[in-house]
Figure 1 (cartoon, rainbow, N blue to C red):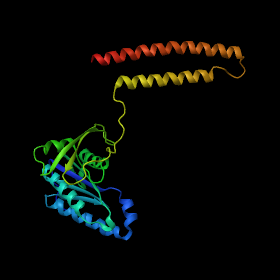
Figure 2 (cartoon, one colour):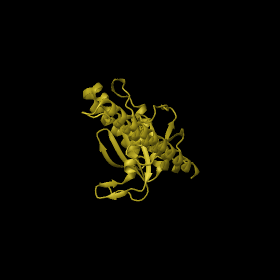
Figure 3 (cartoon, rainbow, N blue to C red):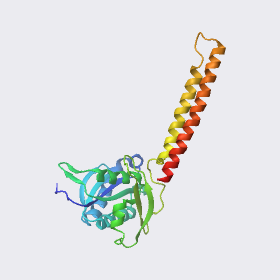
Length: 257
């Protein structure tokens, strides 16, 4: 295997969308379609200086020295896939992602968060879609191939990534440009005060429920149980009021920060 590039590099991940359904439809002809897909990708990427790092089934992992070459390769690859005549009139759609970073070169290949980020961006896309990370998009802002522009998709929360990623889509003339929303994790509320209020409210509700279900004990009279429950409710009402005051103070302090 050729020595891996060090320093700043741009990764490209590719993956066929709906490969299982495509296999069921084509049967024995799927192997030929997969081979053609590999040939088209390899030719387009090699022409731009891409280095094949790994291939797993219908997915590729490539590395480029320059971000602009990676973008040009992705565009060329998508155009080649779109213009190819696939068996039985099927449409073989490939999603692609590009991310630029400074990964660690280990004994068995590239390692580090940049590899995972590039892969997660790819898994969020759809067949025919090319997605760029914020870093890659910034590097190629003034060096886009002819007939290609960018569409800002905003920040998204990728699976297993602590920080959100600002994702950009390539708009390639003559190819589909409209896709469903990215397949990403739902973002949890990030406001600290709101999370705190919800947690305290849930705790209070659990305490109320526990008091109501445990207020009457076996062997005690009905009146005694009722009295205990009433006392518990009075205490809990006071607790709820206290909690509400604490939450209000916390929210006020956060607003002043």
